[in-house]
Length: 72
Image (cartoon, rainbow, N blue to C red; front, side):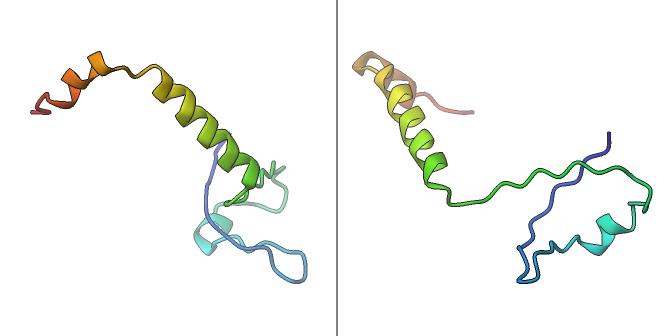
């Protein structure tokens, strides 16, 4: 199934604007699956804080040696 990802905004009339280059690849008879995600969701921010906190719990003083390694 072809997939497109693009940023848009919810319009005051309840519609979403599909970019012209994407719309040109769609046909009226196509069945579409729409997934909507929003930015700045407080729940997402809480999950991000939890993941970061849990990840850093595994980082100990002995891991400092990796910070000194050259990347190239």
